Length: 253
Image (tube, rainbow, N blue to C red):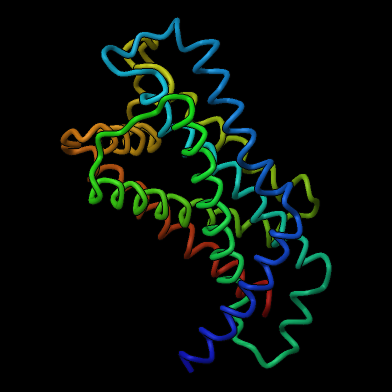
């Protein structure tokens, strides 16, 4: 049974990935927007933002990574919505394949597409002068946090992908997630923000995740930030997974 599920998931993931490779603009768009934001902040606003001894490109790259993922998952909801509206879901239900494989294929495709976009963003950041003192273990920790964050947001994306009544509705949910890093420590130190905004910025999930990745890149101790970041990622992942799977079961019932 396990082999059966894995084989079906692999086959369906291959189908979704082929759709992505045939739509290069999907990866380009999800990578170009964060890169454009990165270029604008570094070369237009960066000189006016005091980040202490840290170079601005080193300071803001973690936030750009999270924006890249938030942008990418809107396409996950879009692809899922297309399968639902195009009748592919009904067709899959009539076939002798694992039902969970249909959903996991979209989730794994989201992970692969987002990791490719992140690599493109890091390459451009290196060309712009980003440098890291992180060792292999720190880089693996960064990848692990980004994978957890991608899974958490992807399972959120599954819900509008299954339930939206329009293409705009399927992808609109990602806008608040893309905006969230701007009200965090991702681009400016929170000390410069007015009271209520500073409180929100310092207690929302993006700040702890950004601070953890920034510390890992700098080769510095991350203290309690890593625990808070993991708690946010795992907590959002669990809630989103349960909600998405319940929604999926109702959809195919």
